[in-house]
Length: 84
Image 1 (tube, rainbow, N blue to C red):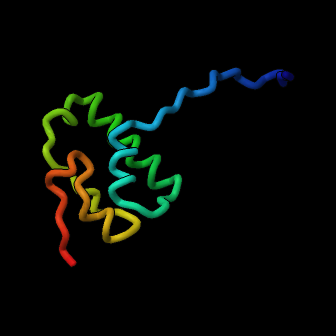
Image 2 (image 1 turned 135 degrees about the vertical axis):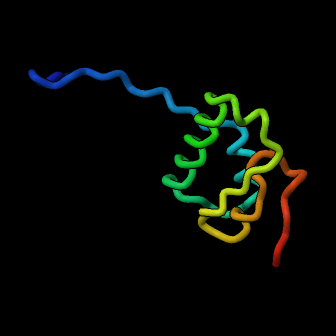
């Protein structure tokens, strides 16, 4: 490993995918982009940190990559809808 003078050494961030996101992605099918997955994962982490996630029954990420994922409940399978 080499270091350059003048550069700050920063630890590698520990990044883990939330299990709720993996369940949601299985229900949606398809292959989402990394950018979209990271955005949803960050949303879930932030909602959990703010103690909001546990209070949700439904959350529909309407800014999705396809119609199926837009109408699939992110929180629970119970409240997913089909509008087609």
